[in-house]
Length: 341
Image (tube, rainbow, N blue to C red; front, side, top):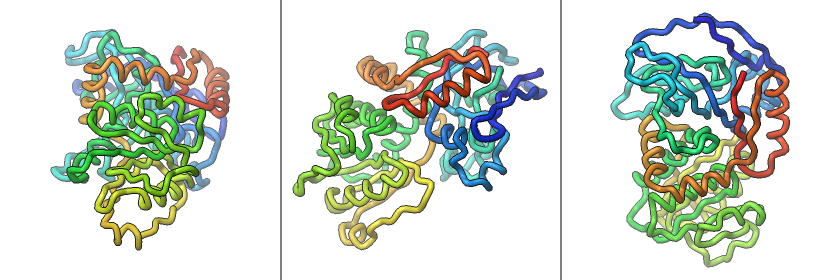
């Protein structure tokens, strides 16, 4: 099968490359339909990764968040036209202890391995998950990010103690919003407090029990468990505040990605007996739990619709470039492209 792959070859420049694909029985062919851009895609598009990384990974098709429809299943298990979520993490081995998303041998789409910006995507059978027909397509486009939130909260469940009274989330962006919506389902009896830098963004978290600007945190405010969803240089200040306001022997899950090392006050971490747990990406089990939560909770699906920043149909390379450029000015939510190339 000849496939058209839309690869980034240098900053802000895409090229269409024809690739010969072989499809075996344990693989599927999926036509991408709705794709969602994340900060990692933008760092490649704008050339903000180190030159050595760009030389190593480009040319490469971007985007790891998306859904598509099945166009060919050699085994005949999934009907043509079935809508599926695409699982970007692609393990090459199994480990009884290490999850698939932490195995160094795993490949990840749009990170050294072609992403979803293709005419067709050939996937291992276990790298797709059928979705209910009534799911909103633009929201479904970023189910991968919902699965990352599930991964973070699942890890919190494994390390936290019995105190679930107050859960604090640092970060008022997309990841913070998604994680907050999931907290209301996974920890329904907990008080949810959101810490952010922008009052206009915090207003979107109307379902939280409390929202607090990070420069106005009361001295006596204490959270039982915490999640850091800021990333970048902002993660340093967020971790510092978490260590200060987290109850002794509480746990903090670190989810925000920073390109540069950040300082952590280890003296306070040790003195307060705090557990720090890092999480990254997700696996099939997280996708399955994410879809189960969305199926069971219409209110969660409705809240996630508020996260759709803008949608646009793309048909040409010029459309793709314009879409990425527009996303750079998008203040709130996820940018979702309707893939019609």
